[in-house]
Amino acid sequence: MFSLGDRIQSLRSLFHFDAVQLLGCTPQSRTHLELHCEGYNLNCASALGTGFPQIYAPGFTAQASPQDLLPPSISECSDTMDPPFRSTAIYTDALLRGGFQDGMTVELQRGDSYLGMIHFSSQQAGSFNRHVRTLALGAKVLLEEAMQNMASQNGIVLHLIPQAGGLVLRDDLLSNAAQFSPTLPKALSFMSQETSTLQAFWLEGKRSYRLQAQRFPKGDVLVRLVPTPLPAMLSAKEMHVLGWLVTGYTDREIAASLFLSERTVHSHVTSLLRKLGITRRTEAAVTAALNHWYVPDAQGAILAAVPGLCH
Image 1 (spheres, rainbow, N blue to C red):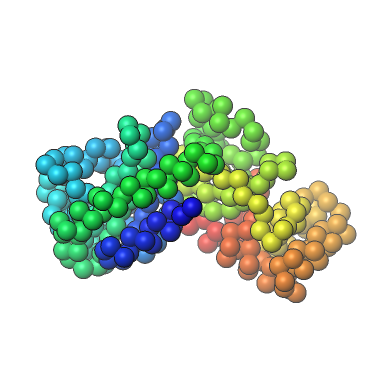
Image 2: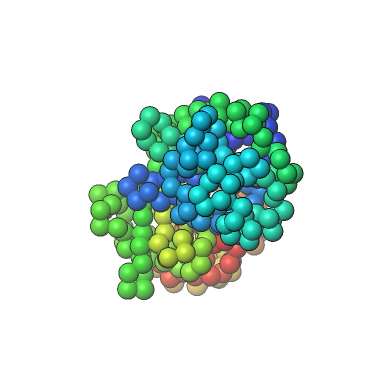
């Protein structure tokens, strides 16, 4: 089965784009979560990921293109959107400064269910003309099928909100988090206070998840957890130790943080180095940071060690 990334890349055979961002919408909170992004700098990704949904509610396509329901583009539909897109800070302060001259947004839904949207941008003006918009309308069913399959097969979405200096799960979503410990909100509270995204792993007992979290301007955090095996056949303990190697801690310091003996930590380091096919712990630390192979800790030490882990 094709993944979302595969579906997006297949669109390049239909029309050109220099950047793309796919946003999924959680049905309970109606908050958008970035599922895929390439080609945008952080300012553009933030403006499109958080600012666009705040200004344009679901159904903006019908407003911008009432006759044919084609996806709106900057070059052909900006003035019919409310407010006109070229007058928004998303365009003037982010996209233009990022070098993008044209853009197109496709709303995604299955039946009566709104799934989210996908933004395309081009550095060339007039890229998303009527012909391209027609192609995009015909191709959007591929993305809708992939998104629906992804949502039905796996993945848990949690919405955390600020409270008393930390994060708590929204009261109306508590049933979705019964299997997760309070350590998760505490660990994610150390994300940057500004708009940021985080990719990592999360462990609950014998269960492992790929974690993606996004913090929004008001401080709330949207989290998506997908059941995923740990990389390189690592054990849960080895995964925890691998993450702590990113901090540069010694075996003794890691042992104190994980409440293990120094000898046990040394054994885990030796084992994970062998499984990763490397010989130095510094190489393991770089590998963990580049691939987001770590579990955020409830003290925030791992996120603080490498600011680029949360961007």
